[in-house]
Structures are given as structure tokens and as C-alpha cells.
Image (cartoon, rainbow, N blue to C red; front, side, top):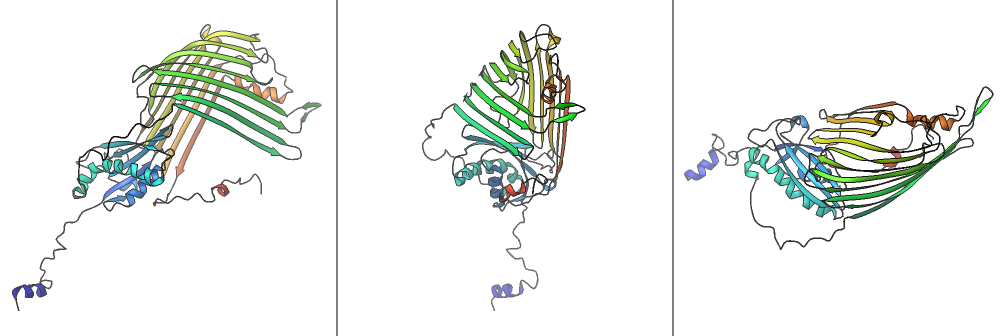
Length: 435
């Protein structure tokens, strides 16, 4: 018997090395997927499906992840601007990955009208690029790099239009023997947007009619039926002076029914804005302050506490807004101060709102919102206390109003990429409003 044949027969018995056993082991890159926002492209489902098809990647809960992949999208016209941001510094809740960049991101523009397969193909290459630095650390042999110009000649620019138009309408109603309600609304908008300027105008009309039995208080009958209507509209225009500064103007006006505040009102303002972020920031981040000055003309349905049936006066507004998203935390703050210029304290509105959303862990999300308004708005000089509609509609002149909202969400989501919208309409049926 030859030595080679003898070795093949006796090798397994005496621990002879097996070529297959000598192959080095490797681990998969553990990725947690964080879908923060998406527009019309089904971004989260496409990315999750692609990750599930990669044998070198495992989609895991946040606490086990080496990399957290955050997905965001904004939109304009027919394009969704998608941002894929990978974070491996431990700040997003996952584990840190030594030797890899703390974060790396890619951006891709996707036309939402394309077929599903084409949308997925546009997202695939940026997804691989954003994961490549981390795969190079965990599974280096899984990455092959090739640098070459894209195939074919550069594509010709697609003809697009900066103009947009929309119309809307809706209504709701309720009918019973003694109680009836009908509300309708309709409107339209026209806009034009480029990288350097933006203009828009819109108008909206709504009406609400409520019929219900009167209330008898002593010997006095209080009518509870109401009929309210309004038509309002606005025009805005802005021009960018650079990456941070812009100038623009604002026109507003409206009319309300006789129980409302205004028979008619018109406001015109021009001003300047500074924004720390560029106008096309991929995550929609904004940190801006704007100051506008102009004038206002009002014609009231009732004489106000200043003895005025109408008023024309100069006014100004200072508006600040900040909206930032950093991985698992988003924060939004809005501050505004509007006033009559002289005298300042005769008419003013100070408003503030704060909102934050936090991902606390694999299964807990927290949302907090608070808003407050302090104002001096001349209300009607006299109110008919027996008129339910006059009393309720005069709430616009209250000096202070505060609202707070807290939402704590516990969730155990399915870990596959399946989506199913069947019976959504059944789930939304009122629980106590009917049969």
C-alpha cells in the first residue's frame, strides 16, 4: 500500500489536518437599521431587503449592533433625496467599532415615479459604499474595490419644470334627528422653486355648520347652533444671496363670518433671513432667524376694546426656527415675536414651541412637545353672554395659552422586511362612535 493511500485512510484517526477545517472563521457585520424618515420611495423596505440578502451582514437589535444605519429622505418635485448614514462610535446606542470611521454617509437622488426594481438598483450602490469602510474592518476579504468611469456617455439633462400646482378639498358631516354638523374645505396652491429662489401662493376656504337644540338657562334660551366660515390666503417669495443669507417678502389676507374677528385683514412684510445650514441640507436641518417689517390693515366685525372698528398700523416680526436630526435624536424649536411697532405693547404675540423625539432603546420611543403663546390682542368691546357662538369665538383674545404633549411608545416590531396594509381601514373604525 502506498504511503499516500495509507495517510488518507489513517489521517482522520490520528488527527491529521483537514483542509476544510483549516479555513479561517469570520463573523458577519452586525447592523441595526434605523428608519427615521422616508418620502414616496419605500426606502426602508428596499434597504432591509438588500441587507437580508447579504451573507456578510446581519440585521440585529440596536444593543448588539456594531454599526447603526440611519435612513432619511426629503423630497422636491419628483425626486426623493435619500441619505444613508452609518454610525459606529457607540453614540447611537450600538457598540463602537475600533479601527472604523465614527460615521460615514452617502446621498442618492431617486425619482419616485421609476419602477420598483429601478428604485432599488439606484439605492444598492450607495448602500454598499456606506457599509464598505466597516466591512473592511470586520470582513476585509468581502470587499473588492474597482475605480472606473461609469458606462456610457454622460446622460443628457432631463427637462424639468420649477412650477407646481395643487388643489384640495374635503368635508365631514354628521346627521341625527336633533343634531347635525357639516364642515367643508377647499383650496389651491401655486408654487415655483429653484435652487436660488422660491415663490408660492395659496388660498383656502372652509365652512362649518352645527345645528343642535338650544339650552334653557332659567327663563333664557341660549342658541347653540353655529355657522362659521373663512377664506384666507398668502403669497411668499424669497431669493438666496448665498449659502446662508436670503431676502424675501410675505403677503397675507383673509375674511371671516360676522362672529369672527375680521371682516377683512391684509398684511405685507419684507425682510431678511440667516440660516446656518444650506437650503438643500439632506436631512432637512434648519437653524434660521428672520426679521421682517411692514404694515397691517384690519377691519373688525365688532368694535374692539380700543374703540376701533378698523386699524392700520406698522408691524414687525422676528421668527426663529431650529430643526436638527442627529442619528437617534431630533429636536425642533420655533420662536416668534410679532408686534405693532408703535406702541409695541398695544398689539403683540409671543410664541414658542419645543419638540423632541428620542429613541431610548430597541423598544422605546419618546416624544415631547410644548407650546405657549403670550399675547395682547384687542378683543371685542362687548359680548352677548346669551350667544354661545359669540362667547366661544372670542377665545382668540385670551392673553395666555399653553399646550403640552407627551408620547411614550413601546414597540416590538417584526424583524423581517414584510409590509402588509390589508384591513387598515377596519383597524381605524371608531371604537365607541357607533356599531
